[in-house]
Image (cartoon, rainbow, N blue to C red; front, side, top):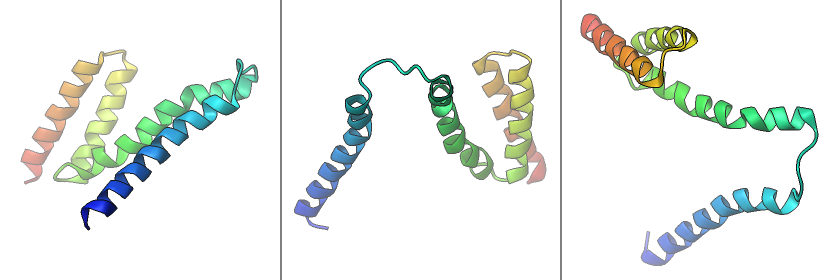
Length: 103
């Protein structure tokens, strides 16, 4: 790829990324009063984060089993109202120990 094509690709990426954010602000002028739409929009960031994170949890470990076990234990720990840092430490420890045991 020559320099001209790289610049065009970067500009297209900038335009598409910004249009995704600008178009909703131009179309929606006032407060959203629809209860269903408000609740739907409330959960969109969480669903997006989960969809992007879940494959990484399973695929980045040496064994998908260790990632799955850590995910389940992390969900249980979070359900018991543990903070983000303790849950992350527990999950990392479980993945490390299971990967050491499996290999």
